Length: 135
Image (cartoon, rainbow, N blue to C red; front, side, top):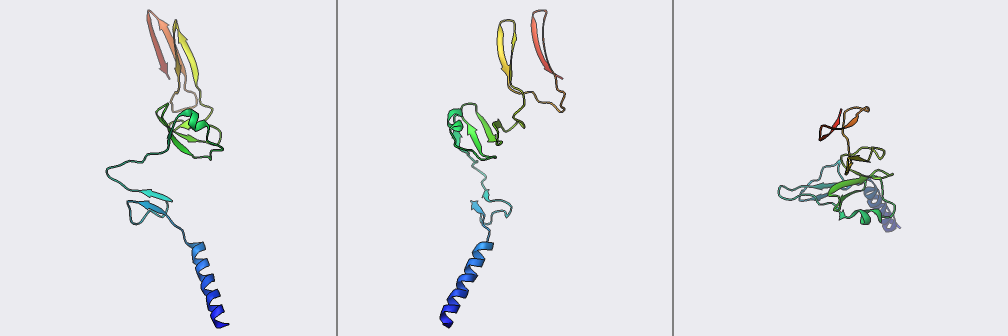
């Protein structure tokens, strides 16, 4: 009976230790930072996230918010917000993406960066020259 109690006590202790133990994964580092679940350390190599095309990215079933990939088609790091995929420099799914044309020339503007909510775009075509500005 004493033997069974000792085994049971040992099992409970081991189980308790397993429940309170936290682990970090470190690559090329002996003691990973406790605030990180994954800590990579290198002075001669970089981090290479999953690389895929837009079609491959869009085939990810139920992506989790924060999922990050490198889009090889657009050559940009992207993350999933829970609503849409965004380049790392864009903050909101509702930021504008629109087309413009000046004369017979067409193009698109994929971002306007400004410090306020009232950033304005102007397009001027006069005297044989075209100009686009943000103010």
